[in-house]
Length: 359
Image (cartoon, rainbow, N blue to C red):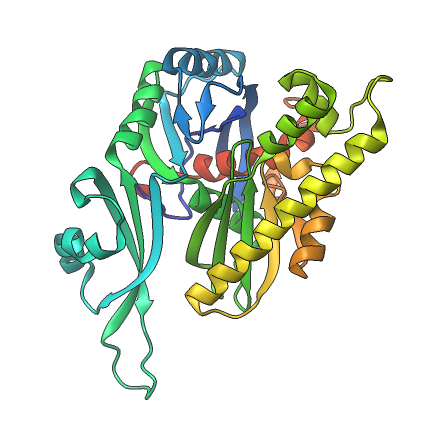
């Protein structure tokens, strides 16, 4: 498992979400990237639930189908994970060399991990020394600590293997997403930002302080499926029909005003939860006010969601375009499709920037 932000070579990035599988492959082109492969395969809602793969055979089959559709030859793949099985903490340790911390990380990290230390894989990054109040010699250092449950890691790597792939990198959704955002928009040197990844099953909120340093991530149990379920109950329609209605693709039998009222109520509820989560993270991490919220994920396209978030948080909200600085051939890709699917692609783009051993 690793989480280095920038790499020199390309690989296939595969983002396996609750609602869809997203595949991205890019190549370095000058100082940026060129898109080589991009595809999305929708999943039935019962196949991946709360980050758990419920039917390995069917999901592996969907991955193989997506690889075939996109004519992908590369077998090496970068995956990512999120949810309750992933712990990300910005912690303070006594000042030491990296090799010393690596040798002692098991017992140093135990106090921050809510699982048995034997049940997790641990990785870390030293962020730098912690300044002392009197300006003296630092005695502590700030460390980004990541722990992933071994059984969940085995589940995802086994799924990739079942699909005929060779998993060489396992990242964290929040880190892959920030890689894509940073590549397209640069590092925020003077302000704290938040990144929302609004998926089908849940939402991940990540906060970074000045200089692009991760502070904390927090899962919000609210995603696009909450909207679908409400629409299904209201109109007695299928999950697939609810997905279309959610985007205001309406038939003459669906009352537009009722749909808009349903979306408004859910947008307000969601925005309130995001505001509370943001306040918790900033107060826990003792950082200043969040200056901007970036948003991505399939459910981020829900009508009027961004304006509700801005109203509840009193913070500007911007949609991430993960292809903003990526070269895309009009001859090779349907640009309308790429633009429409861009909110779903940010994690995949961040994964496609990775390589084994971080090059």
